[in-house]
Amino acid sequence: MRYAQGGGLSDERRQFREGIRMMAAERFAAGEPSSAIAKELRVSVRSVQRWRQAWDKNGPQALRSAGCASLPRLSEAQFARLDAELARGPVAHGWPDQRWTLSRIKTVIGRRFHKSYTLQGVRKLLIRHGFSCQVPARRALERDEEQVTGWVKETWPHVEGPRRRSTPGSSSRTRPASR
Image (tube, rainbow, N blue to C red; front, side, top):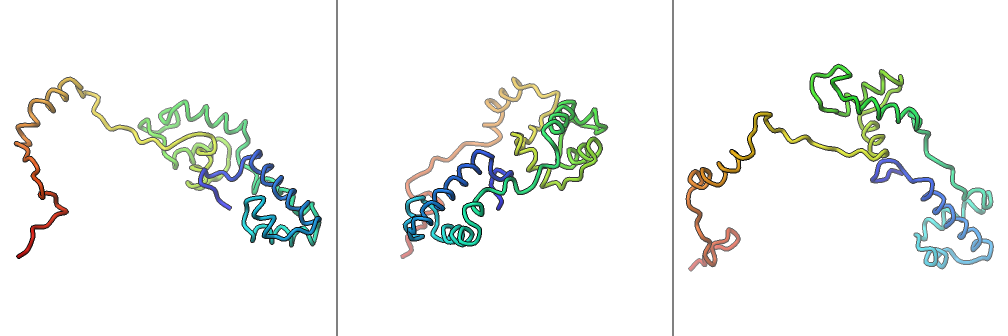
């Protein structure tokens, strides 16, 4: 199952869900119907039915969490090293500008750790560790904010021309009455 945050369930959340399944197992033993268990535990009836089938075959052990779906390719120590490499900047790794892209980060991971990630995998890895997508503001180094502000206040109104005031019924949504 995939989750919006890109990393599956945390250990805490996985334990919480396992607890719900264990509560259901106690009720299976008491002979309660699936619909009553689902209502009480606030889960779907279909989930309770699947849990009951697993419980019937292998007992409560079948409802235990299997842990993470897969082990992370980079350990926490390796990710800390990657974080330090990213802090050095792209220029330190041979790129001509200061923009990190997923493909550049993928290349750094390959060079430093000899691990292969897809671009989507790099994105999920970064999101899991609290990174976010940021788009740089493209502004000229020579930009003078005071001159820009002055131009917007003084010159732009003359270029734009006078604004028409809207009158009742002048909205683009209204149509003239046809006769």
